[in-house]
Image (cartoon, rainbow, N blue to C red; front, side):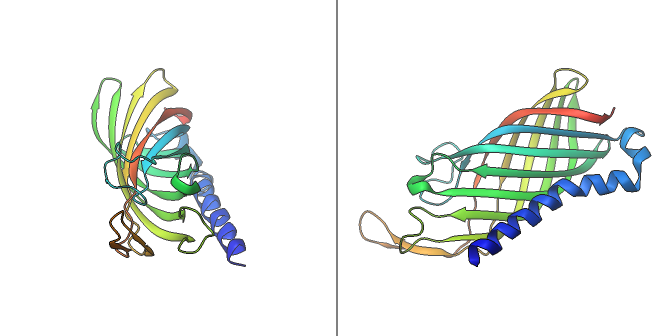
Length: 211
């Protein structure tokens, strides 16, 4: 039953991520193609420090860096601001088959522009899912948690419709409390202070509506 509930939660979050811009376009179709509005969608590859089974919080120094694909949409209601939704599946390279995934949505704001380069800030909320190492063995867990995710995005336009994209996110999972573990010296380590995964995504994005 718990597995079924988790699957239903994932489906509900994914539907929310996908359907929000569709509903907005249906309510005001003219704004989707005029007034500087635009809609973009893309995909990329992510590398994240999971903040679990890692000795450092650096996005580059975890021995078991989680890897996987990310997809997103950006509905820019104005040239300087809009909404974003994304889904990420970090299913590779984890210690003991550890995995993390996200389904997120929120706002974005363009902070700076120079010729073809745009820099955006964003704030997303949604769900984070984790499977800890060696699940379902004793002392492991699988569950979903509320996530608050600030981040920054750099986009470089190659053509009128295609941009390269680099993205950094720092996630806060405030309610996470994992099972205790022991260090190499036998010291008990508690995991009840939340979780803060962070990392980078690189990919490409395509404009299919607007200017």
